[in-house]
Amino acid sequence: MAHCEVINEFRPLLMHKALHSMRLRMEDAEDLVQDTMVCACRSWDTFDPSRGALPTWLSAILTNQYKDRLRRNAGKPPSLPLDEDLVAHGADPAARIDDISDMCDVNAAMRALPRSAREVLRLKARSLTYREIGAIVGANHRTVGMRVRRARLLLLRTGE
Image (cartoon, rainbow, N blue to C red; front, side, top):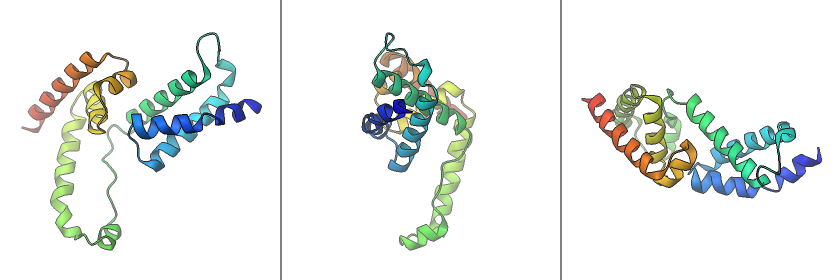
């Protein structure tokens, strides 16, 4: 599997994209890059150098893996720290009840949105630019801007 060794040389490039373009936490970026590497090794026979360079192919796999994760996690609430973690860091778990309730309300409103609206809002919440979001969802930055504005309006109407 010499091709896997070649692919592995691009791990730093993929980590950079996952951390900086997709704004993932380190452990999430590592998981995403590892899944990308496994997928690339398994799909090596589909790589066609006449259609594009290896880094471009790997970057496309990374983006597709990321979009798949967003879809899989679309209806799930965000992970919250355990009470023990809160206490260990000096936080009062009882004081977090209102915050958690608000998060549940926001999650319910997000689930009521169309999938495309949820996707752009989640990406925007990660502080991605409209151009970066456009690269992920396959739209130009102006279209993304319109989608984000519409999604925010829908979210406000849903929360009323």
